[in-house]
Image 1 (cartoon, rainbow, N blue to C red):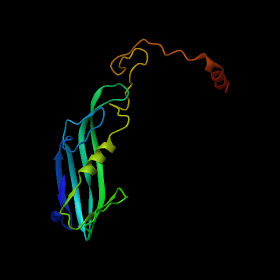
Image 2 (image 1 turned 30 degrees about the horizontal axis):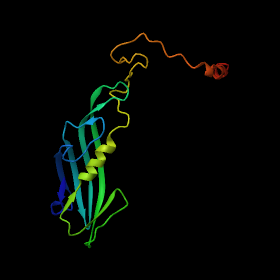
Image 3 (image 1 turned 60 degrees about the vertical axis):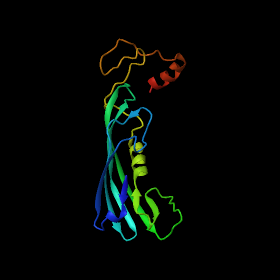
Image 4 (image 1 turned 120 degrees about the horizontal axis):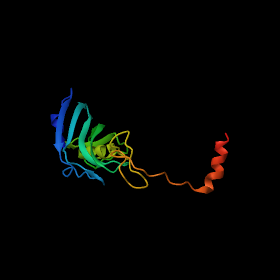
Length: 170
């Protein structure tokens, strides 16, 4: 996903990309990327800086952390960063994640790494198929979203009964 710097206009230019997760080398455990990653970026050239902002989005197949069912989830990542072009030939680095430095002689700007990071960071840590997902029964393992079970809750450890009595009195 390369943006040709000479194509960027001072009033802004829009760039659209569509790449597969394999092409972008995006992978995450328990996540499948059946759809391409779509990227819409606006780049504005202001002097020696390029201001880029846009979105990357795709649909993934992911496992619910409560009921373990596979479901489709729309993942959307907001992209925003500034690229500064300097008169130098040595390799330049920046510690700021939202700020990148490149030599003025560079003809293109590769945004693949930013898209990759954005999509991976937008994946939820605990994905849920729905907010009211009931999960699995801890006793029999049946999916409580699909049917009920007759399991009784686990018996509590009687060592905690004295503490429970303390709270019952209040």
